[in-house]
View 1: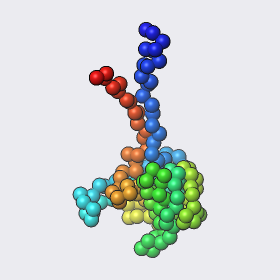
View 2 (view 1 turned 135 degrees about the vertical axis):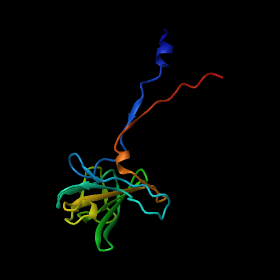
View 3 (view 1 turned 180 degrees about the vertical axis):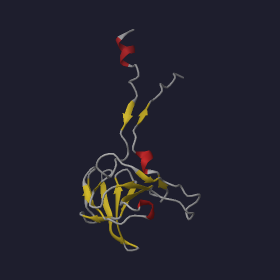
Length: 157
């Protein structure tokens, strides 16, 4: 094989990093999985409920900007618009960062409040939802693994 041919040999597939990281330290137990609604206004569970003790630190799932930190229907909610365009929402979380703050993956955003969804009882849990810019919800757990990008050679024509 000539030097020119070996230089043109394809590289091994590159591993693409996960889009997001868990918003809690350590492994997570899913108490209620994502339930994709049949259409935009149909019932479903637009996120996952992760077991965590009250007072646990909630971490940024990816780099981005805090776009909301405040109450929604009486519950403390925090939303981050990630650099990828995805938006993560967390509840019930008392924010330690302000709206407009730039955050980095793994940075503490706030603390988990004791009361969670009914699916969390009797323990507390973090609800984590992820949306595309068009408000389509995604399963956050499916975004936690990387994937391999493999480019196939273009045939001479």
